[in-house]
Image (tube, rainbow, N blue to C red):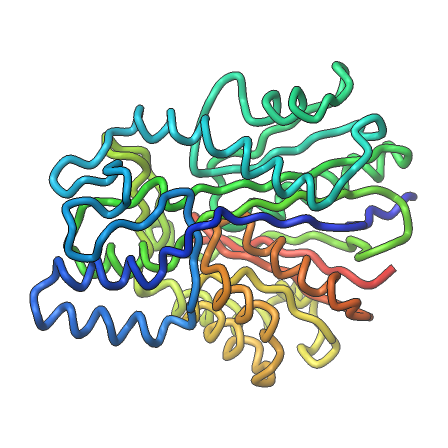
Length: 355
């Protein structure tokens, strides 16, 4: 049976670094006590840069962005945000695809993943048209699954390669998280928003034996945590809720999974059997929870922490950035573990190795 390989990954970000401007903007709108707390938490978040399709505005101005899209007291409704998504998301996706530089004539399948916007005709059709893909290219959209959706997209690509070894699958993840910035002074919401950013990736998945070979996939639901991460459509965009209890849920579940009859996400193997960890950089405390849950050495999650520091949490694109960095450095992997967490609360994972 053919084995699917991630041959290469291209990545792209918008040009606007918003992290420092966001911290200043929010701190200026909070009372003195909460502003100090917010700045302290921002300093401990493990993030230095985040990028957005919006140019940041003045810290003490009326609008969070330079063009006035997020004007204080008059934030846009969901329709205006979706119009902006339709205008911006295809361009960012195509920028990532251009880094990958696939041959359009050889692409047989297109999988497009995004949870930050909806449009019809969809992103898949915009991308296929812009790339000049064949009219009979098989298109699939993975929507609204959140941060672990990269794993679901790769699982689909894996199934395609196993059933059609000659297939060449283009997997695209594009997220405009900053599009859903909310007009709020609620400390928990502003701290959650501080994590998220915009980014896109494009991966070529084929049976060619280069890059990372995809091995077994496994999902796991975490009991009694359904409301820990939610992502709901409201009148003012998509409203993210990220409970402060998420890291505790993850750490507890990972520890318990190691004693489960099926071996949990580690498939019954000791953590030290794995020589590479590609963990979704959802936030510093989430990475800390994985580190504690599996008793990992301090440097085990360095690739994920580096992505978090440089780009923030780009939802479904984030894990692909981590894998891209590993490919770029030519890292040799004997047994790797990739995982991400998202709404449910659930975990999605797969094992991988160098070709």
